[in-house]
Image (cartoon, rainbow, N blue to C red; front, side, top):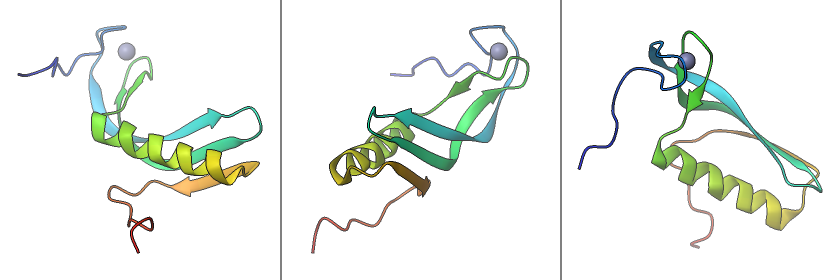
Length: 87
Ligand SMILES: [Zn+2]
């Protein structure tokens, strides 16, 4: 099944292109910042879309930050993070 793979922005109907963004989450006790996240960005209004894989990876980073309770967590986005869980 193909999801909506249109190259048009649903907000303003401008064109989207692959770019990078900075992902920020406020966890209450601290913030997580992930830099160089690949995203589709609308050239016209600046709206951003992350794909499923990217969102999953970001979720993982946020969970790690949550469990380590760091006040400020700044990461570089890695497409395939090395699993430190399995040792
Ligand atoms: Zn737009």
